[in-house]
Length: 577
Image 1: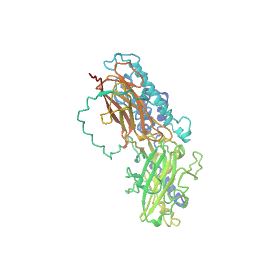
Image 2: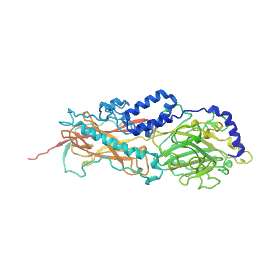
Image 3: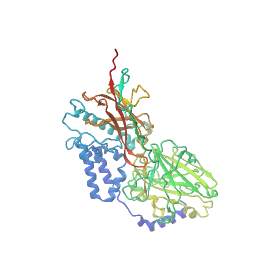
Image 4: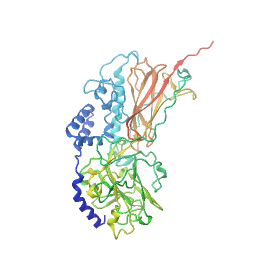
């Protein structure tokens, strides 16, 4: 800021500092939970979380709620198992049969066992599922599949594995998922499908395109939501490729008043993608007052971001190693369009105070018109102090929309008076107080599932398989594309409707980096045969169900279940005289 305006705001900030208050950051709870999860004891994790929430009070509970929606939830699949109620007892007793919300896609119906174990040691005979169904063999298969999935997920979700981009050690998935043993056709057969002549029920009505975003379970200075951007946007100031602008973030604070002044201010729109954050905003003003940023990167026509991906909510910027101030200058700093995205130094991460680290992998741009300008920007994930972007995450966030003024040199304070903030005014020193910032939740995408025969021979026949046929399952869920550099994985379940067989865990692998489409294949066999890994036992007339639990829907809903089914036909023998 210019010296006079800066001193004025600083003086008023000192007077109003007590109004900002302080919040416990709950970091001890977060670390304890992280250590417990790393130790792999899900039951102990659940008990510890309940105990700490009860003893440490609402502030730490809010901290846990803020940090438990993304990667923390991915590692808690077993806690949400059994009947899907989140009851660990159901998950460890083998009684539950509903998928949990774990990685958002991790099933929680795992086979039960004694205290401290997730697997039952005994073998029992099932009424349906094989003449002598060895439950332990399938339980061991499910456990191994789940543990391999979680181990791989830890590597892919680790923010440290994004620092060096696609070449970093540990970030590359092994690319292996559930695969059928069958690769070719076994010859022609005639199969009778029981429902072939039945009338099909009408398709359910399409889901409402707009659904309300649920408010967080904690108090927030300002809550916003960032939809998932599934295709790259061109940063040129033209918002046509954004489509409908949704989830606007208001800026109800002016720079010189601690309380809201009753005005909404310009709206800011944020979206996220695996490779970074997008922003758009519109300024209605006299075009003659558009000056860009001729003096400082945060003074004039620009957008200031105050962001902490870790959301640890410390009382000062210097105490929060992930807190950042990033300036988006859509007209270029001092007219230089190579300097449009830069981080302001606060003597942290090697950036000296009052200096700017410009990014050549980020960009901002604007388009002028007769009534002002429209701007957009992209902040790369590599520019974030913590490179972790997961659906459901809450990011500490405040924004300042700043205006130019043609005679700013003669009256800089008049220009600064035009600034608007989203969660707290600069008058209380919010630019250096992360505990006054709001919460921006990263929304997900609505998953779609299919199950089909790998060797469907009659294109016009109903979808079906016969015992011995391989099947393919597919999930389309863009928000589980955690990295644009590697093929990711998700986890689902396959089971036979009405059968006492345990569901089979299926690991689906992304069809390629950055596609958001995941596929796997598995085998079928007669239900009378002994268990074979990655194989489901069926008989004619069965219905096979594929279930996937979506971590976050497009409007922030947790644990949306997506299902698909396929019928098992009867193999027929035809004789001729």
